[in-house]
Image (cartoon, rainbow, N blue to C red; front, side, top):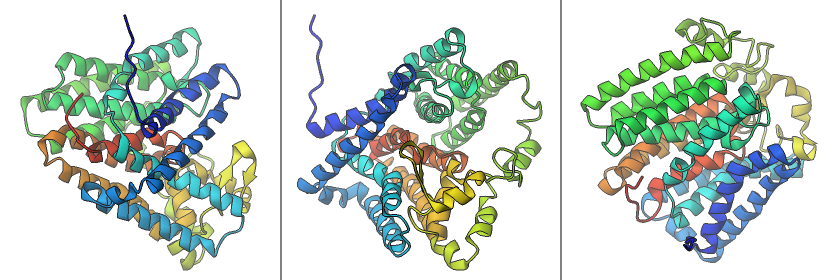
Length: 416
């Protein structure tokens, strides 16, 4: 029996390599210390992809057809950010590091549009492995809460974010495919139930809210069927059961945590993310403005790199040394606002709104309908993530940009 290895071009292998390292390097690092350095090889792969785009003049294809307006927006955003920051550079190294942290995903996104052969099957094939890994970490290794990441390993504080992104992608996929009669009710229930169980075990409280948002938009952008009623009832039942499990796993959790009043107070509290007076997810603007002080800083920010921090290599900006207690670097939204101001954050959030609009338009092609419905929701969920944590500035953002590129890639077909 022979094993068939897919034939890929060099650029396609680079994309596969980036996804492999993004997903599995943290798991390997959980067992073998020091392997985290593998993440920096992604930068090498990304650079090679960028050089291929330039050398083969593939950039011309990006400014044609469905990707044109998105490519223009991204290039204008990058150009503006660099231009406005040049006169404010305090540390050249941190300036370059900020360019890397903020814009590396767009090179990967463009590369996926040009050369990607895969689709959501990539994520679908990892569902069982992820579920088994979560149970292994919880039952055998005795890991709890932030230390549970499934296929992303079990290093505390580093693995919840990619696990959350993974659950968002696979549940969005499953909801859309079920509503479009491309997935059985049994398969849908198994995927959703396992995701709820994982969320309870890994203390991903936000996932219950995220799933409700996913469900809402899925119902809005798909045709009405009896399945919509079934899926809503299934969600309510699943949420009740999994929340009971969450309180078993976390008996210290406030019984009122998921009440509307509690969530509003938590989201707007001046006590901040940790309850100690640091940045909060929904009132960060007023807190940042107290630091920025001038209207000029509020409009254009302090400049790329001037709020940057690179703990792995020991680089810290003066701003971070002064304001690290605010934990502004824990949230993508606060980081972007501090460095690029109102203009930057409008362009940043605007990109994902543009993604949503353009992807909905791409869905008018029946061959691209399901991919477009999935990715339209993912574009909106990315905005949620920008408020929730800093995952869209980390290595795991590649997962989301891989998915968002699927409707734009050449010769799209609705395959599972």
